[in-house]
Length: 197
Length: 318
Image 1 (cartoon, chains in turn yellow, brown):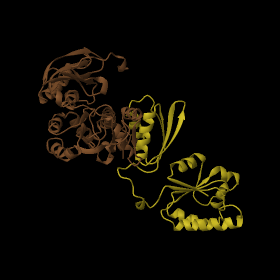
Image 2 (cartoon, chains in turn yellow, orange):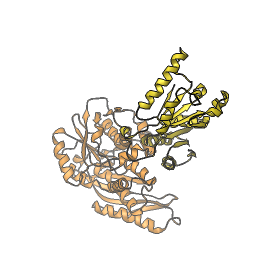
Image 3 (cartoon, rainbow over the protein chains, first blue to last red):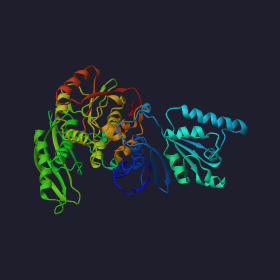
């Protein structure tokens, strides 16, 4: 979910009230808020980081555009890391092997990696497959067993539609869903950690 | 800009504007000096009676900060006649009057003008013995610093506008409406080297005035500064007024250790309304004075730091 707010011209504490309302109205999502002074910028940053949201800032000709990413519900108490079974970690697979130097070795490594991921806690939230990575989510993929088990445990598996088209394998997708660049960017931005392979 | 005005050359002028002190003091005779001060501002709370109480307490505070006793006051009023009901003005004036009566002083009258934005405050006259004037310029090396009220009224006023932290807001209103009378009466029974009240420049701004005026440096322990309830929580989530940022930018001789949480740093610069007294007290009397203050109607009083060797006006917060 994403919301855009123009908070220019709002008297203090208007900008903080605006970001508070926007973040309360979503479970997870991105809010972009436009501010026209440094004090509003500092206060919105303080509010967002105090609630565990990521913030990035762009200056736009004297104004400030803040992108605030909420990954979990606002709560009064911070969630303890060991209480969370699934973390908001996203893995991005950009090829169908792991590493460079030898394709043969890379094929072995990617199987080993996904097997180890099965044994690891907390679970990742999402696996994104792009470019040649989509070859791992189609029929006859050497890692299908591992991906199936991860999917059964609630891990989201998404393959880039453009990439599936490019390799002409869209009708061979065997696990998870087709996604687009907007969702890919959103998932990566909202994540607390992004690991790209 | 004030330095462009002519400097008075009157031997009876005991405290003028040179040391940016809380009030002016003028000698009448060997046992009496007059303290003169005034203050007024726009509403900081919605309730007109409480606005009157807070504005009056704020104006009276400067007399206590000089070690004196208020005797008379005059109302300063700006009010949008015709736009707000007259009962609002009546309530503001009642709040002010009740506070002046509580201070043991008398309202002689006042002056009002029509203005689209309401403002209220007092011009106050007090008395003090010429040898017992407390200035903001007498702090000595080795003194202990004591603060008599918790800080955070600026942050909590911002919280009030955001309709958050109602308990903290209520505590802040009560604190702002509290006279510094009890604190001053207890303190003047001890040796006080320097005294000032904490208002618009925040704790660090007024500490700087005392340090610079006294020609000393100070260190303040952040974890010992008394805070109003919920002030830290409100500052953490960005309910920080513009004045706090302005004070921070202006005070270049203040050095804050990075271990001090940003919210506490913001509170140190937070502009206060009708804040407590900052006292610089000889080391040997500090414990006894603190006990007396805490048991004598000022339970939030705390020791917050010391006067140390260093560059004039330097404040180190750790």
